[in-house]
Length: 116
Length: 114
Image 1 (cartoon, chains in turn green, brown):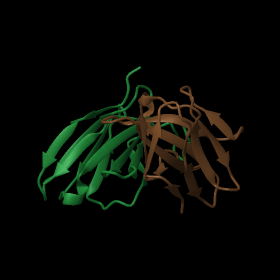
Image 2: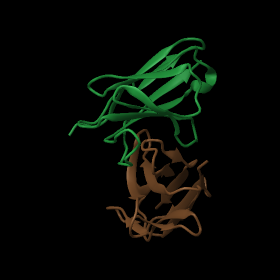
Image 3: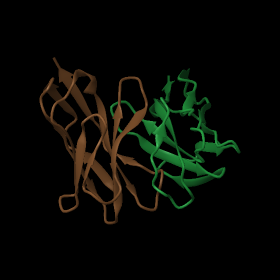
Image 4: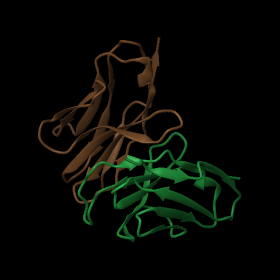
């Protein structure tokens, strides 16, 4: 069984730049969620994708956007990077339908973004 | 709105001692409760969960947690910890109609000393 994989593992950007983070979901999982974990904090929900559509969003501005592809993999895009965007970005996959069967979330190891 | 409070940011403990990591939540609707563990430089792993049924849930590595609806708590316990239990532990809640949208606490750093 293939787990959740994320790339890149580390990256450094400067303010104002754009970044794309990638996630391959666990085999058979059709739902992907993205979380931001700032240093010393718990993860915060950014958004979730199900059947290639956004299915729930946390308190993040529109410059945080995403995609889900037919193979259920996903991208997180952040435009106009700010210093406070420095964090560990976690992707989680699950098998859930629209409306939310609970299910267990399987997390990747994250992409650590540093914004200078 | 739901929220999760982990009452201790750091818990130092000696090996083989018991430990309790405290978690309280607030919600006006039914929720599901989780404990996740994060080892250094790794992602989150599910430790245990309460969805329904018995209020006492156990993990395969000796941790247990009890759902207490009247006290809105879901404390994590282990009777005897090991060095390998050193990690960050996160309590999380999810509403029963919002699968995938976990609300996490701030985390508790468990440090087990020899």
